[in-house]
Length: 197
View: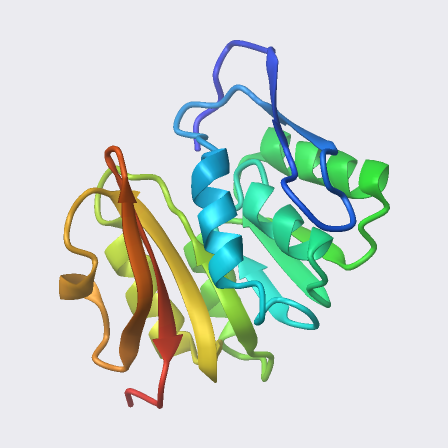
């Protein structure tokens, strides 16, 4: 994600849980757009019975707002993947300020990280997938997540994108649990029912 010449920091607040009302700061970067408060609130209402103790992946982390919200609500671990070094530094700073000891951040291109991680046996029960809207990033990420076998059967994937049909691009074993629109954004939660291989 290319860096902006602006050094102004932005912030969002965590909605609920252990870190409720704590502020997350993040740099001004082109394409970095934290998930809006009302969308986060809706998403985590959907997840309220699924988040505690879960291992989570925030794949295009950006500000880290989704991952931090998960940590605040009891996730056992969140791995933040972000390619911008300045955004990664902000996530690390926020982890330290909050004392969020179960957050790990990796400075890496998401697809390179997925390629490396496909060699591991680790699987996630909840993945946040909110990539840049431009291009085919979302489609590529969905395909790579499926082929890398990083999704636990019965796990959940959150997808956020511009208003279009999400379902057309999904593997057949990704089944919609919930979906909604908010302005120009469509977001949904999908369950991984079985192996698609």
